[in-house]
Image (cartoon, rainbow, N blue to C red; front, side, top):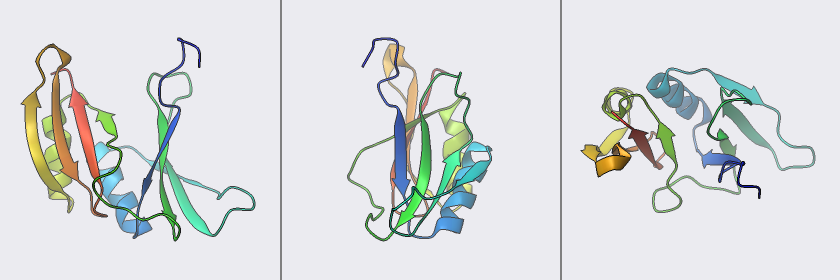
Length: 129
């Protein structure tokens, strides 16, 4: 990997109820979700990507409903970039999620909040303000 590349090139968040999860993430981050075709030869699955800008900073990713992969807490924690992570944490609670860690300072690195989605996954929120 070159030093000019982002450390993460793609992420997937596994979900059980595809439409519910799609609605939750679109509401929390106020971004459209783009339906994706399943990869050729893959088992039946549903996928939708977070809207992305290939020239922008950060990583692209998708929600995936696949019988082979189950959602849940305790695995990898993905942090979403926010202007103010308290705003997205409040939206998560308003749209069926849980706030596990309200906005807290991480010193010179900004602020984080930890929330649970409607599928049982835990995600992080990060902001500099």
